[in-house]
Amino acid sequence: MAAIAAYPELSVTEDTSITVNPGSQFSTWHGNGKFTMHVDNTLDPSNEKVYTFLDKVFTEIAALFPFEYIHMGGDEAYKGYWEKDPDNQALMRQKNMKSLDELQSYFNKRVNKIIQSKGKKMIGWDEILEGGLPEGAAVMSWRGTKGGLEAANQKAKVVMSPMPMAYLDLYQGDPAVEPPTYSMARFKGSYTWDPVPAGVDSKYILGGQGNIWAENIPSKPHIEYMAYPRAFALAEIYWSPKQKKEWNSFVDRVEVHFERFDERGHNYARSMYDPIIKVSKNKAGNLIVDMSMDVEGIDIYYTLDHTIPSRYHSKYENAIVIPTGVQLFRVLTFEGDEAVGKLISIPIEDLEKRVKK
Image (cartoon, rainbow, N blue to C red):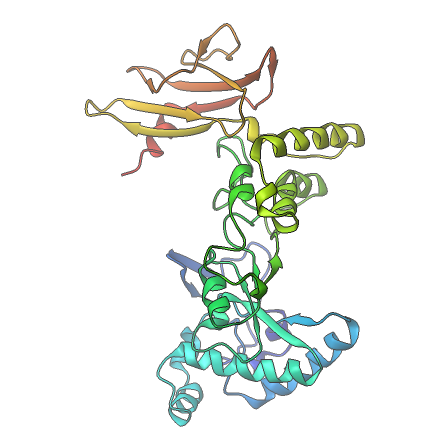
């Protein structure tokens, strides 16, 4: 978008009237990864000026950074404007392309050659596999681990960075008390996955990356909260032998870091002390609340009468049947005599919304 705002002639529409500001509704997401862009935010693969522009950009990037790889992006490219454009349709016919994925692959392969001409290697998100992976390119797998597996099986280098486990911008506990985002990645989930899946030759896995996208993170304390302690989890699984991973030992070590953070005034999430709340209904139509903990040795107390839970209230032992007439469900966790989790208050109508249809 930034490039096209400056040089609209690099897009298919060449629309000089479009302005995009933070918060603009420039796309609609339909689910399953499908979306529609309301503004043209992709470069025009059929325009030779695009490749001249990119050559200049990558010349400057290559001179600035001494590293082996240059990341070209490649994710979430909206192809709707290409599909309607006569020049791109003519290019597809000329090159005997059968799909728009092949058109994007044509673009990716040309970018790959530009980057290689600077003495660098190209890496891109796993969409660059679609339509054919450029020769010598590495893949960063974000849509789960599937793209990484596919790339490694093609003997391409891979960085594992999958959603949701490696996404540090997702909420990490119950959504009633977490900053609002589009999905969840619990601390234990970030720790327990394997960046080198079974059946993959580990020599093709360069490593892993944690992603923290900042469009909903306005401050330093907020970014600290989102990053920690999940960054510890990713560091351990990326840098330690798999056979040395042990969840309970890891939790003990993380709690030592919590003390250090408290002393130094750093923010962090204590969401691992909050219960996992699952809601269903029985045959009679009553709400059923099941709760569990990722961390051992934590007791869960709850109330149904608007009072604040304490160790003198009901201790969670088994699934709770919510009686008719209850308006508010509250829960708080304790380790011994100390409250360690957040006070979670969920109106009954919100519990209703959590029941899977």
